[in-house]
Image (cartoon, rainbow, N blue to C red; front, side, top):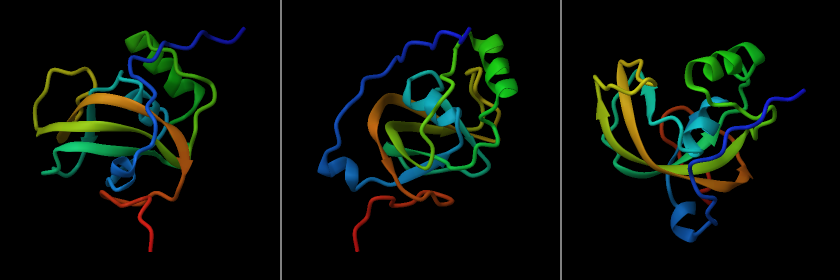
Length: 141
């Protein structure tokens, strides 16, 4: 019997020209899903960012962490049930970067840098290639 999925804590919004001009960060699943659904409030990186404000979340094509063992561990530690199928290889949402810290009391903080996330919003999936660092996924020309 399949597990019930956790309810999202964030709204589904529509694409706007302003959103299409934003930079993006590529995150592996299931963490991209956890971010845009409002569960994960910290994104750990080895580098700091000065970016503040909205940032698109790209779900990486790399499925290394999207497996039963990892999803079961997340569920046992947080109570969050991750869907069995997730979009990969495109933009899945937008989140605001509120801060960049080296210490935080979030259960998601692992450092060395924690990007503090707020105001998660889901977007209709848009396929695109990811890249390292912050990148412009939907830029034309």
